[in-house]
View (cartoon, rainbow, N blue to C red):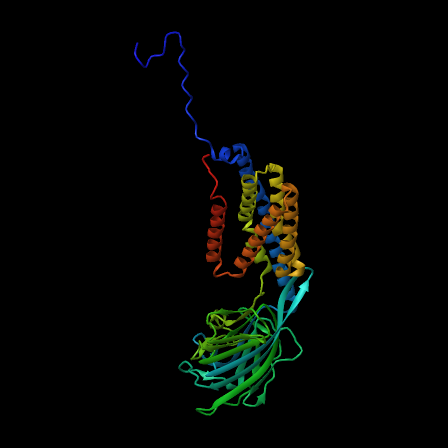
Length: 450
């Protein structure tokens, strides 16, 4: 009998079954089915975010409707056209031997200076508001007339007129006025005429003949306009300068040419543009002075933006709901792991509902109170509710304070990210790295495979 054989009559022991590796859930003392339920709960809690996003879009659309309604009754976004000299002329008709065909050219000023003093204010309708303004505009131009007419054309100086315009010329407190070489002009009868998106005014000059050769004629005037959101200027001149100033702390400069100089302080903004798009006369309509060149030139100007765009900020905050839920659930899982607690899936769900209510509270409170106040109030409400509930679930004030600290860090981080648009990605990436580092630090002594 060999040494390896058991003695006769002795039953050999059964071989031990192979050991199966323990799952992570079992190592944590958390059933695998619970982890699956938590993953499903996370997905289910994301569904309300889609409804909240639709609600934000609906409220933002309603604000745009109110802005248009107020603009229709107060004044549209304004674009200003400085004075152009329109010179009608006639040429022998090619259709009738003894007839004449009429046409006109528009002569831009050699120099044009426009100064706009903008006085913005807020107008509210219900919970929604928009920015309107009254602008006093001073015009100063210098014409060095060098009309280039077609061969055989006869200039009709007696029918010449100046053309000015703006997007919306509804009556205001002060009527517009214009002076040609010191002579006060009177607008033509018949009111405004449309030219593209502008309402234009004609100022007949009633000249007896052409100006003296080389004579420079000064034109000056004032107008007062009411508008909404933005004010622009069409730089029809060989050299144009446009200055806008107003008591507003969040201007945005728009159009085809950015300002050459800007300042922003406690008194408001001031911006200066320089340029010019018309050095020579161009053809235009003889009757109203309108031509394709006027309608196609891009303006330059300023838009009065909301300092904190409420709905855009709420929408951005709502997109961080998944991160908040994951970190809140992860904190509860660490409580189970480190403190040996058992937290029911229903308690996870109630905590998740508390967190996802934050963007809805933020939206509801921001409309009447503003974004900053709404953020502080919504944060305090969610932190108080979730922290008190955590104290009741864990029966440990220390853990409740830790959870409150986690929420305070998350809400503080989110506010910083929302405030730093250009550095939001960098800040978010560094914060996520820091959060992962904290989790690794807390769990460094856990024997995951034990």
